[in-house]
Image (tube, rainbow, N blue to C red):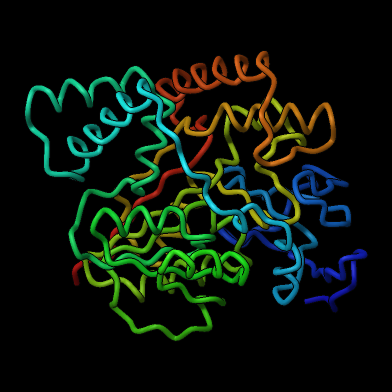
Length: 355
């Protein structure tokens, strides 16, 4: 490996990454050159290269930041912010009851289910496919398991972990961002700061390990998946959610696609690449698909990057752009019914064999 070099005024050093982390093939070309950080203003220019194996299709950052300098990329990251309190209007309270009924009917969270009223309320969520997809993600696509142990790798400020604890899981979290971990601990959560590969946690401890929009930030995804396998009990499950490199929106926006997110996203996965890595780690595939979740937000952010050169997280888009985002959300939701690989996110659920 080449000697690290200092890249920019933030003192971020880089090293060459000459091979695909999923299949080991060299890059065939530079897919996107001279990219800048469009979200949090880390300095430097970055390039994403494309795997020479078309069946793999990975993109990765080359050169990429050295491991020791990765925390410098997150000094202004969105996980440092607390989740805002929600104020429910009368209409929103109706939908809130529908959301609770949906989670009860489909995942077993809550005691009131199986009645005609609960089924009717849950059915309302099928009129709001975008919100329904968010609810699925909020429980990591997991049915209720009262008292089961769940580890979230890359838990950030702990918002999703806290919700899972409220739903009866025994939760723990890990994140290398100390500022985000402070926020999570303020919620009373058991969260460690650091690299999971250096923690020497006890084997066979957890029923579920979850990673939502994490694996694309990791320098060594293969080692991470092997570690997850070691930490799970026999029969335990791994849940991974990550941007889909072959999403319809990337085809539309190219270098302006927000989930490229240089330099924090070290690799962008395809369905086939994630399947290969997980099977190499010993997992059997239970679920592997793409979803339209987040398509509207990605469009809004990508349009901002295309027109303004950057996107401010949390900014409220204009009414025309929100309408365009809603239309795009609907189009992607329909598209994935016909071409399963065009969704915005990859959803992977794997199981560790019982023996």
